[in-house]
Image 1 (cartoon, one colour):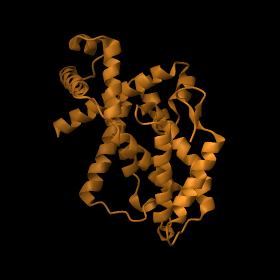
Image 2 (cartoon, helix red, strand yellow; image 1 turned 45 degrees about the vertical axis):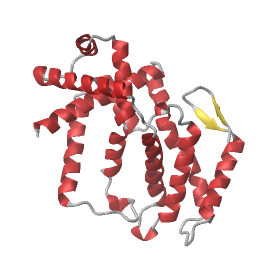
Image 3 (spheres, one colour; image 1 turned 60 degrees about the vertical axis):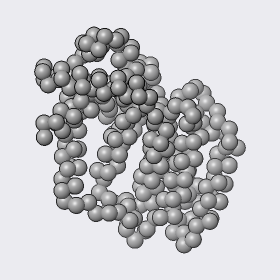
Image 4 (cartoon, one colour; image 1 turned 180 degrees about the vertical axis):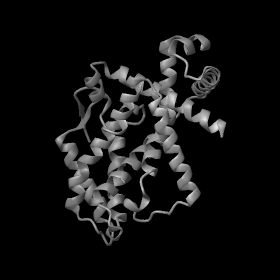
Length: 267
């Protein structure tokens, strides 16, 4: 399958690649028995795979490729069609979206390897940020944190990016898990009351932490996670470069991590 791209951030499948993808999805699904979803419905939702992958393409690192994520998402779609239970009165498109996104995130997570020395830098930076925040009541500035770590601000942003690559799925998973399971899961396990309470509390604290971000970081988080804009689209909104959006996004997630860790330690 061939991949073309206008630039590194916007990979696209060629027409031949798209047709091959459709054929592979149909063939895989045709092997299943008792199918509640027909081939046409699967084909109609294939563009959703590309849309979901496009949102996380910024996390791609070798040896993982755009095609790998497309394949993982397609498998997620096929499994969604196989497992879908219409008796739960959930729309298949909604259920398929959850399964596709989960498959793509799982594929990314399986390749999210952070070297030991980088992991040590992340933990050191997080610990120092927590100490400063506990002492002053607010997160340190980039300059202050870099000076205390005796590194450049550019190096600090590299650490933020590495931390995001290591932990980014947690927010996506929290958003997914916060949805009522009965709305989209065909074989959902009902969460115990204490688990639902903990999840609700986490969401409340995450929302409060987002409100405490500076204006630009908060806007980027809301545009990315609520409006589902890509990094490139957000860059166009603010008239800044896509790498700068990526930096600010990584910093925002790091600051949220610090705030949530403060609450956890306080409990």
